Image: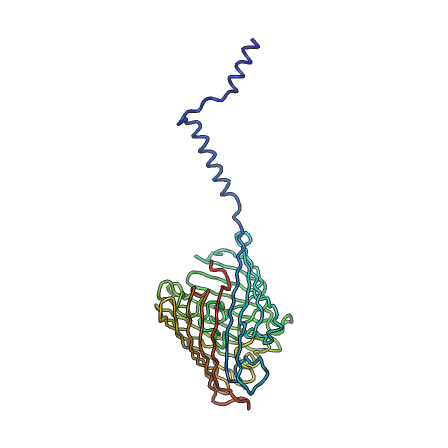
Length: 394
């Protein structure tokens, strides 16, 4: 009896032979495959850190005092030289499904507020975290809150990243607001609309009063994208973006406001951009205290007691599709000297906006020079190179 029982256990322990097309084995293999796929889908997605850099350098020459390129200290001779416009490195990445972060650093060069090339400083530009709420009940919406150091991009010219500029310099108003400050911003985006409201430290830094900015814009046929010029701005060939903006600083140093509007239209190989900004007198006359550096020497642009209305009109056209684009810009500063700026230039694209060569001229005319210095009128010639990107294209 004992021998019979042991023989039965031995037979039970032996595996049954498997035959081709055995349904039992096929079912087990299918189940294993399903389990593996389920396990893979349950693993958290990898949080990919993205990074990159942007270089922009130029050679500039001018005989006019009005341009802020005098690194020699000699006002009686023409100024020319090689300049570091941007040397930016950045890193960004997601944290979970609803948060992301970004940090960017820039070496301050000649057109970044530091004219001593032997004593460059590292400036923190973007350094923020962002929480995304999803659509928050808005159809196809994306609502987010950003906290940290950022540029509010109140005008379209300011908002465009440096690698996507057509001219090597922004409009005069765009240059004024080209600065980073600590604060918080609420932003709402849909396929057709974008709006934000930001509060930042402003000119008196961490004292009581703050600076406020807001922008509302609408996109038509997908909008023109964050690009100046025609190349790459309108994938659907015809598109437009129009916006209104507002800025207010209530500090004792600079107490004033700015309101304005801008519009950008792209039709095939042509583009057109127009902006107008109505400034309170205190804002523009104290721009050295509040704003970033501009291309122009401040004491040669005097707004007196005026509340200026500064406007700019820009047109570009692709002479050779995706290779060569030419552009013209006209600006009126509405200052005491009734300064007019005329910019003419072109880009040769090697790899879209991430690798291009620019050549152009900025001509300045003043009816009345606000100082006795020579050369208030004059021209600036620039040749520049852009390589890299300011942020991920994704």
